[in-house]
Amino acid sequence: MINDLALHGKPRLSQTRRYLTYGDGTPFFYLADTWWFGATKRMPWRAFKQLADLRKRQGFTAIQIVVGYPPEIDPSSPHASNSGGWALSPDRSINHAYFVELDQKIKYLIELGIVPVIVGSWGYHIDLLGETAMVTIWQEIITRYGQYPTIWCLCGEVDL
Picture 1 (cartoon, rainbow, N blue to C red):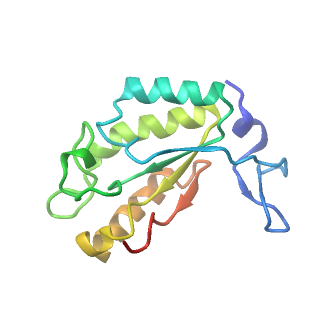
Picture 2 (picture 1 turned 90 degrees about the vertical axis):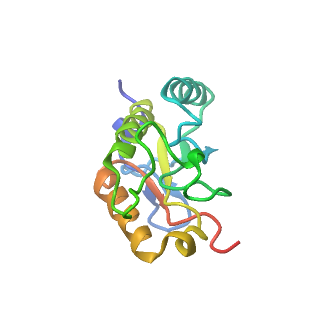
């Protein structure tokens, strides 16, 4: 399927650094929906796909999605997990099973021509999980999705 991402390339800053363009310089209109729990079991694959299809028909160009731990919940909350569990194992290493479901979701957005805006957890999670755990999550995010047309958001609110 040919979409704007396939046609024009990854989003980037314009030469003037005042707006976004696709890789070929075509202006990129950032119209995003926020799915803080889109990577979790609160949005299973069928619901994710249906909502992504709807947002594509409505003209959305980006979906903001938290990879790791969504806001306003404790990292150990079942609401932070998906079919593979939590992003980190109890020993704070990467739980690759968590990313199996997420890989499918990220790839589907890109197939539709929707840019995933990946948020690497919420600011206060660094206090709960520690700097090493947050670096571990970000290393996995960049390793898995760095070659894709994504936009990065270091964290949600820096400090609650």
